[in-house]
Image 1 (cartoon, rainbow, N blue to C red):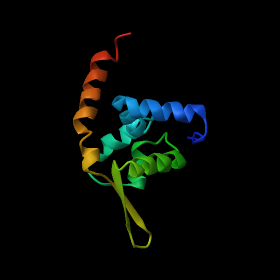
Image 2 (cartoon, helix red, strand yellow; image 1 turned 180 degrees about the vertical axis):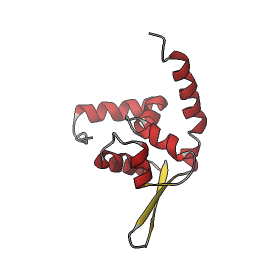
Image 3 (tube, rainbow, N blue to C red; image 1 turned 135 degrees about the vertical axis):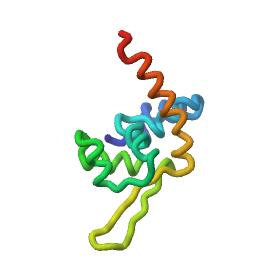
Length: 118
């Protein structure tokens, strides 16, 4: 997951499209291979980093960290650090994140309907 240079034409195009098209804005926030599965997992409540890693064994720790940071930056989830030894970190959806529930459920229904149709 590399950052696009702010001075690039690609960045300018993405920004313009995101500003003009709300669907693009939304997919920029929750898009990505792992964002929706992470949000889906958190619909049931708080989870620790290790619990998320167990749910998605094919994701690298680095990618999981990057996706969690992106979702936190976009205020979809919160990260709570507890001052314990060893440190405990929990992730939980925000109000904005929980508003994704009907959208995620509709995507699930759509996928079930169309998955085998090719």
